[in-house]
Length: 340
Image (tube, rainbow, N blue to C red):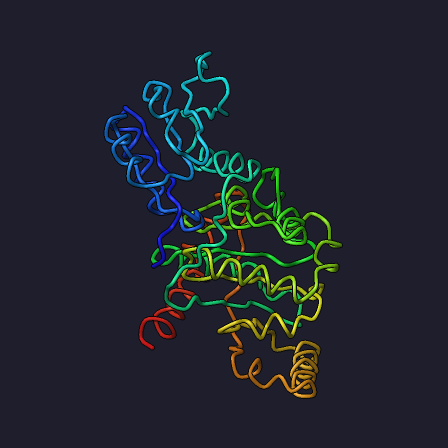
């Protein structure tokens, strides 16, 4: 693996520092090598020999030597009362969720333009890109994709991307998102060299599954070209530690066939009624006309069991994992991923 930029965390509270390190070790969307220190002295010795790109440090650990060290950006971990002598540094409240601390840190870093994280490409095993698509409606496509993502995420680093015009995620998850995939597409078009860092500040997690909040406007999906989708996908492949990306694809995606070509496997939920079968036949015929045999070869038609849940938010996601659908997905993974 190439040497990566260093994200250092220094906090004198040992329990906090190691809890934070444990959390960071599970995050796969952070484009840094993470180092955690529980004393200012040990960090000072380290930074003499190793350039640090981003430092998140508690007020009690901060000192004049660290201020003078060569560090890309310093952020203060605040316990709620800011010390006046560190007002020149952005501060982040430490006693909030670790996920929120990381998102704020990456957001500050991305806004500062401090470094060139994007230039460090990772050398790693090939990433699985799973497409979930069907030309037929009401097949539980998204339900299946979310179930698959959560179950895969128990053993693999998994990112879920919903590319539908109307995902309904704010209502399904019962929460508002400050930034969405639409914002990331905006940064992509600007040619930002901090794209993966900006993505890290947007990524949310539920049951170990990372996801980017989907777009709010269907125009964001319709106006994005296949080249832009592929460029975004390649950035994630090159500069993140994910093992699996799940693309939940809708018909509003421009040049859908080109994006399907990027998938290593494609799951197509289907229905058996005559209208549904006719739509599938038309889709397959179109692939043949456009000489997309590779896409046809990667398609696995599935008939997942029907799932019903009266809950939303975290409750809905929990229900997926422990339902008949969850059992179906686990068996599918065992046969296709683990046995094969």
